[in-house]
Every structure is written in structure tokens, then in C-alpha cells.
Amino acid sequence: MRLTALIVSGCALLSLSALAAEPGQIRPGQWDLTLKMNIAGMPQLTPAQVAQMKQLGIQVPVGGQSMTSGQCIAPEQASLDNAVANFKGQNGCSIQNYKRVGNRATGNLICSQGKGTFDMQLDSPTAYHGRYTMSGGSMNQTGELTGKWRKDQCDPGVPTYGR
Image (cartoon, rainbow, N blue to C red):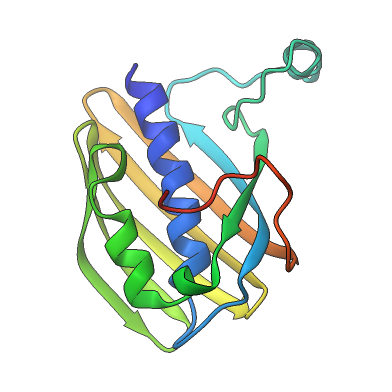
């Protein structure tokens, strides 16, 4: 259960990072968000195990593997203030000590399952990257995040950030 909560928090942070990186606006539309996590003490998956999981429709961003998901960013959500407001309270997490300087955003994540930090950098209005750390109980994890804008119109079924 803790692993699930931390993964969900990481995915929520992906959404936040897509929005919180540039002074002003980022490009609204459909984004691909990629997460790669490492959890201390968790064994690495072999390529055969990863292939078997993929055949079963299971995608897990741990053990050096990455997970990519789609996220829709509506025009009214593509500002920094809206991103932080939408993230607060998601998945039992809140943001503290949030700071943005230019194209870089940093802060602390306080979640019901642990605490962490994040550091995000906007590379352009259509791309960002970042890192986060989370620890809670016996879990310690780090993650790498990337986001790439794909198109103006979101496909049906792609979740909209914060809704």
C-alpha cells in the first residue's frame, strides 16, 4: 500500500512539474510524462521479468524501468499559480517551501506516507526534467521525471490534471 501511495504521489508530481516550470505559461494540450523510480532495498527486475509484466499489461516504474503516461493540461491550468493550487491535497500530499526562480522550481512534498523534495527545470515551453526524493517508514526512493508536450488536442480518455 505504501508503494502504491508513493507511486501515485510521484505521478501527481509529474503533473505538477509539467505546469510549474516556466514563468508564466507552458503549452497546454497532451503531454507524455515519464517516471523512473529507484526504491532502496527493492531488487532490480530482469529484462525477462519486465517483458512478462508488460505482456500482462503491468507497467511498473521501479527497478530501473520507466513508466510513461499521458496527461492533459487545459489552457486555464497552464499557469504556475493554478498548478500549485491544484496539487495541494492530492494523494494525501501537500507542498511546502515552494520556490520558483526563472525556469526552476523546488520544494518539499509532505505526504501521509512520507516526506520528500523535488527539483524541476523547464527546458522549453514543451519539455521539462526533474528529480525527487521520498522517504517514509522503511521506504526510501528517488525518481527522475521528464515531460514532453505532444499535441494541442488531448485524446479521449487521457486524464486532465487536477480533475
